[in-house]
Image 1 (cartoon, rainbow, N blue to C red):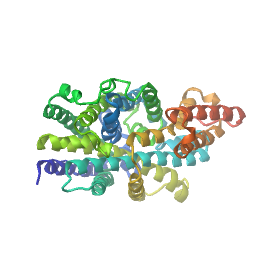
Image 2: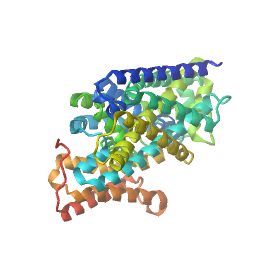
Image 3: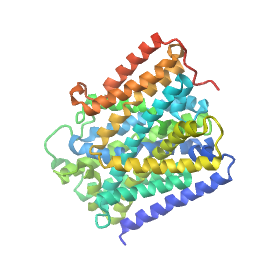
Image 4: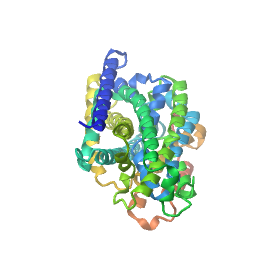
Amino acid sequence: MSIQLGILIAYIFLLFAVSFKALKIQQQGEAKGAMAYLLAGRNLPPVLVAAMLAGLAIGGASTVGVAQNAYTRGLSAGWYNAAWGVAGILAGVVAAGYFRRMNVRTVPEMMGRMFGPGARIIGAVAQLLIQMVITSLQYVAGGAVLTALLPEIFTFQTGMIATAVIFIGVTLVGGYLAGGLANVINVVVIYVGIGAALYSASNAFGGMESILAKLPPSESWMSWTSGVGMAVVRAWMLVMITQGFSVQAINQIAFAARDERSARWGFILGGIAILPVGFLCALFGIIAAAQFPGLENSAMALPKIVTYVSPMVGGLFLAGLWAADISTAVGLLLGSSTLVLEDILKPLLHKGREMDPKLEILYSRLSVLLVSVLTFFLALTMVSILKAITSALAVTASFTLLILANLFLPKLCKKICGFWTILVSLLVWGAWSFFPQIHVVSHVVYLVWPACIVTFIVTSLIGKEPAGSLLEK
């Protein structure tokens, strides 16, 4: 057995050991049912809040996807992750404490509290679409990593399947507490693996000066902005800050925090931890562009490098890249499971009545399996990681606008605003996805935000019934 495979297997065993430990803690705790499984009993301390946020952010898009973009555009591709970090910090400063105080379980529940059942239903549909797109990208990234590093064992498809089996297994066993504990390990493994591989790869290819000399002449390779351009950097900032306030998987971290202080500081610390990873992974894309020009699949830019480092470093790097996928996927799957349980199954099957805790956990786990199967098939259609993810995240503009307006401009909020603002964001995203003729701006977010603002203002003016307050008990 190779050293790389041995390290990967040891990492998998460690994750499952943590998951079973989390399951034991849940069984001994006071919280039961979905509160224990999906929200860790609302008892996450700041360190686990930060680990969940960093683990969610540092996934396939932040590693393999950034390197893929940097393969042609250079260092500036790292702003994708820097924007994520800024979003986490701002969400911590502005809103995470509020989210914890609301005592809700899902973003659509927030929409329903403010704008009625119609907004809750369409909110649940939109949130599930967004999270399924992001989850599917973790299969793509995981398959690329395993194929490049262990080609004698995995094809791209079997690599995707193996990735799915592991993060589904971790999620099914230990729930949200397992996600928090595992992500502490994942974030450490990510940084150790990336740091060791970057140092080793640079030395293997003669140092960065030698690597840069092999690149096609361009000022963009080591430029902080010119490769992707300021319009794209601004779009990433706008998209990430937008989604930082309103994606279920992100808000659920605040919902599960021990208290408002834990939510606030956990988000700030998590945002700081996220900031450097994108630029580090962009360097891999630059190295790959110099050493392996003309790759047929640019998503292989980062994994390809590992075949040129020592087996020990390669094993650490493999675990680090895979940890990025695992950490993101666990949070997303639990977020999607919470949406299915709280916003679809409970309203349809129980209509306000209490559900047996054991049945809640059963439905939650079945939801994880359902979402996993659907996202796996969606993953087969994904080509460009960053393009797909940032396009879908633009839909969150509607949720962020509605949440912030309710918190800071409550007199403008009317019941009618919620449904129509979310619907318009979905329609604009759909039009952008299927009709290239409307690509009159560099990113769909520049269309979604104005459309949502106009819709919110118009519905605010014609609406009569005021919206409910998020902060009402």
